[in-house]
Image 1 (cartoon, rainbow, N blue to C red):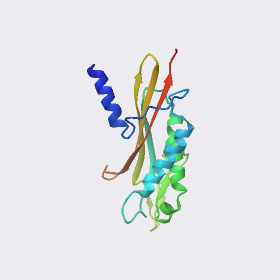
Image 2: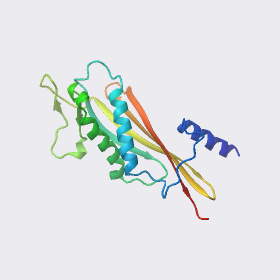
Image 3: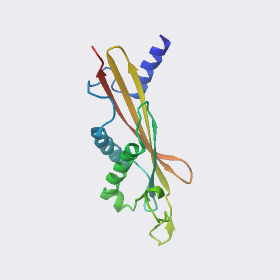
Image 4: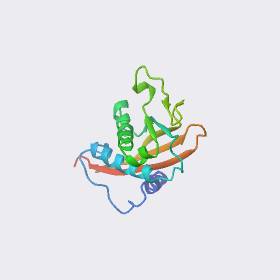
Length: 180
């Protein structure tokens, strides 16, 4: 019984605002391309709206890693797709580009690249910030329904100080009816 209350309490913590709503019944509880689009839109809007400071001209952001802590298998390409799509949308944003924010690929995404980019003074600098994502899920299975609640947490960290300068999360729940 205590495990049930702990599970219910964690759903309440992970999914604020959804407490009284039932999850939509779908064919699968896995994340989909619709989630990719929604997540990318929400997280890029959040990062663009964030107060990152007055001088962003020296900010060089690398999309670092995606960690899967769900109970679903997500191959590396699928995990990287979420962060790459977010990077592409942020790069396309004129406001960040006008402020001098630069996005770079990880060295393993390129061949023959030194990892340094020129700043406004012409000196080559490496990444100053890292954008990461961690996917988590809480699964509740009964005889009739399987429900998965996902939390995809994104963080932008200063590589010199390890201070998180921005973080936000995408939340979604799915349920699938089991054999009748």
